[in-house]
Length: 405
Image 1 (cartoon, rainbow, N blue to C red):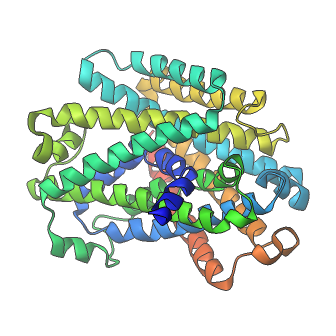
Image 2 (cartoon, rainbow, N blue to C red):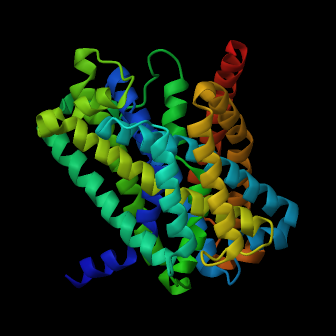
C-alpha cells in the first residue's frame, strides 16, 4: 500500500506530458490509421513511445541535477543562440499544435450544439487565457486538471475497447514491424503525434516545478514510465478500437461523427455526444498546457525567465493561443496553406530540440556521473534516427502539398 502511495505521489509531470501529446491530432491520426491500416501499425506506437520516454527521462535528469533551467544550461555551454533556436523552434511547434487544438474544440462543440465552429475557439481561448494569466499556483492547477482529464480518457477508451472486442491475434501481429500499406505518410504522422520533442524537453521544467532533487531521480523515472504508458496505452486503445469498429466495415474517417462510431459498442446512440466531449477535453487540455510549454521555452531560450508565474512566459503562452485561434477562426478557407506552413516549420524545429537535449544529456561537465549510459544512448540515437526519418517523409509530403497549391 505504501509502495502504491509512493508511485501515485510521484506521478504529476507525466500526466501533464500525456495530456499535451494526447490532443485532437493524436486522436484523429490514431483513429484514421486504425480505420485504414487495421492493427498493423501498433508497433510504431511502441517504438515511438520508447523514444519519447528516453528523451523525457533525459530532460528530467537535467532538471533534477541542475540549479539552472535546461535552456539556460544549454546557453552557458553552447551559446545563447542555440538556446534561442531551441526556444523559438519549440514555440513554433507549440503554435502549430495550437491550430489543431482550436479545430478540435470547434469540431467537438459544433457537433454537440450545432453552433458555428468559429465561436468556440474565441470562447475557450479566452477561458484558457484567464486560466494562464490570472491563476495562482498554475503548476498545481494544471497537474490536477490533467490528471482528471487523462484518467477520464483512459477509462472511456478502455471500457469501449473491451466492448468492441478486438481481434487478439491481429492485435498481436500488429506489434510486429511491417511496412504500412499505401506509403509511409501515416507512419510518419503517427510518430509525429507520439514523439513530441518540445513537450519532452519541458519535463526538465516540470521536474523542477515539482521540487525534485537528485535524490528524486528514481521517482522521476517512475513518473516517466507512468506518463509514457498512459500516452502509448491510450493511443493504442484508440487505434485498436478504430481497427475493430471501423476497419472491417471499410469506413473512412472524414469527420468527428465518423470517429464517434468507435464508441457505439459501449455508448450506443450517445456515442457522438461522448466522443465529442472526449475530443473537447483532449483539445482544451492540450490547448492550455501546450501554450504554457511553448511560451515558457521561448521565454527561457531568449533569456527572459521561465517561471509559470513570470510575465514573459505567460505573455508568450497567450501569443501562442491567439495565433492558433486566429488561424482556426479567420483563415478556415485557407486551412491547407496553414497546414503547409505548420508542417514546414516543424521540419526545422524538431531536429534542433532533439540535438540540444541529446548534447546536454551527454555533457560530462554539466551532468557529471549522470550522463547517458551507453544503453540509454542506443535508445537516444534511435530516437534521433526516427526523427530524421520522420522529417524526411514529411519533407516529401510537404513538396507534394506545395505543388498542389
